Length: 236
Image (cartoon, rainbow, N blue to C red; front, top):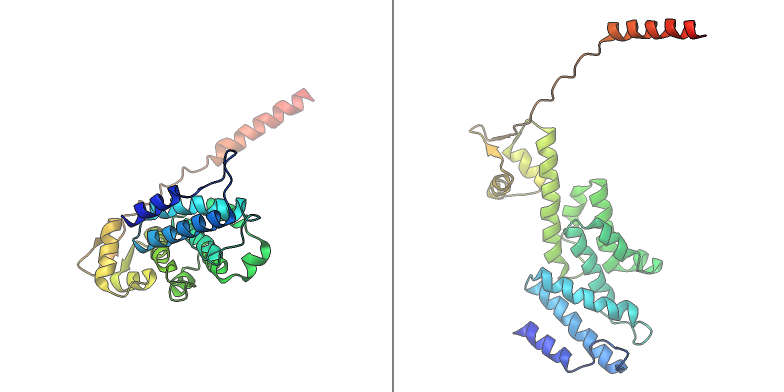
């Protein structure tokens, strides 16, 4: 009902200027503010689809109509939140596309933009501990929702690495690597990944041993090379 109320309010305004109508600065500002509240509300109720829809509409106001109305006080907070959303979904290419739309000085100085940018660098470097530490240093409360999703994405990456790097790992060590304090949390994660916890309290990974490579037939290759050399001499 709350979201429907926003949509109904927008129908009473000239939502987007067209060739047949001209929106006043006040109408554009009010419509933008309603969309911003809608984006914040979507995060509060954990509605990712609605958040993405609101941000798609808001970008018209932030970029296309920036010369018609002054910047919103919430602009970079929401654009930074959108960057964090893309990163949490592992949509790195789209993350960089959105980043390229921002002025260089904003990228380097604005706290709402620098936060997801730093997280992306940690993610690319594999510095997962820094991402876990950043959980307690978000620039706005609304960032926590996508931070939790990002941490789940990071844990999935760590889990995949553990499967490849170890034949077995203890429950305690897995807890440390995954940054999960409670054993039950580790067990839930392991169950989701299909890990088998043995009676020794170790997770055992059924990695297939690499197949031995066929030996190189060195003698045959040498003989063939001599034949080619002789044939080459005869041609010359």
